[in-house]
Figure 1 (cartoon, protein in one colour):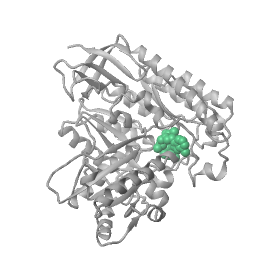
Figure 2 (figure 1 turned 30 degrees about the horizontal axis):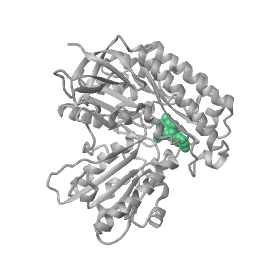
Figure 3 (figure 1 turned 180 degrees about the horizontal axis):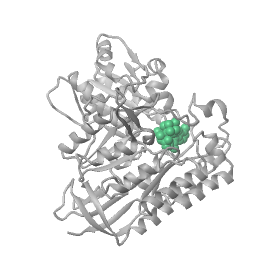
Figure 4 (figure 1 turned 60 degrees about the vertical axis):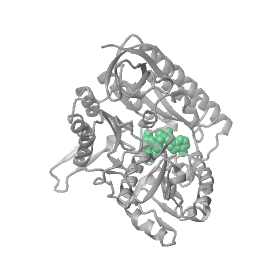
Length: 479
Ligand code: SAM
Ligand code: SF4
């Protein structure tokens, strides 16, 4: 079974919803058609952070005379913004390069670039392994793209994979590539200082750094002015956001940043992802409670329900600590607050009893949904260096199946609780299945489908829910 496809049970969400909580997905650039002389096609893999980075890259390339296109055959420049989180993610990109070769044969001048985590992990060797690739650019080197493109235009291959301790692209105004015009991502920080033993991110995205709080607020303000109704503040560990002005007179933590963005407009919904169980504070929870427009939904990846495994994973919390944080969420924000998780099945040395602890944690928390994977060893990580990947693949897959089945049960049970209640839904567009129906999300990030009537994209609509499936609520708009 494929862990990425295993997300299918929540797949009736829009791409924006599917990515809002750091899931796995693919996004393709859209046509901008502003009359620029060359065209960039950019395909992004992995997490919301990558999608957000592609919007920064498009903005940099726009300044260099590139419009974006949704049609790869039209492209002068093809970028794959890649993910390294699991082996499968890298394999997908390599297969895609094979397909892109066909386009390049028809259009020999087409340049092909690998951006993002795979570029950072494999560096120059990508040029040797994948002959079709002309440039390799890591996540902190996008400002150098104009120079690198010049090198390629001059017949060279080009590489820049330098990581930075400062780069946050704070001053770059992203071109919204896949936005529905209603919700947008804002990167508030980059990199990660945690060293979870399974994870390649600290190696591919470098040290954690927080972006200037005022530039974040300005970006949100500009989105409000353009009619956006929802922003998702993005970081690998938003709770450790910490920005200080150069003269040291201002210090902003995540709770304060949330408040600054929430205060922009009561009509702007504010979401965020990802929260780390070791860092999420009661101050953040109370700030969420204080503002109606901060969505009551927290993506709080547990990874495992067993303390020994969590220690091996170097997550720096144990089961009791995690439960304490969930109890705090319930005490401060109530039963209605949505909680989701990431879970890894079959981490090194995990026993059957320890796997059962993950299932029992899921029973305790009653997650609204989870992103679920089996462990995939990544070269260079602490686990790859120190631990044996000793759980047979079929055992990993069986445990993953059990986790998925448990999640389906709890998702359905949580959705059933929503029946008979009125939900405030932000409409994102027409439903995939019928032009006569609209699709949006409630506060808890759940998809709600209802008959269109006179409502339209961007409206807030009160919907009385009368039915549900594992991944969707169905209801009727009440005027
Ligand atoms: N920063 C987030 C956090 O700490 O929860 C997670 C970011 S990571 C991009 C997304 C998810 O991928 C992780 O939460 C984890 O469940 C999963 N993941 C990361 N490395 C993995 C690996 N080697 N094998 C399987 N899943 C992995
Ligand atoms: Fe990876 Fe852990 Fe950082 Fe998340 S917190 S990005 S899992 S190292």
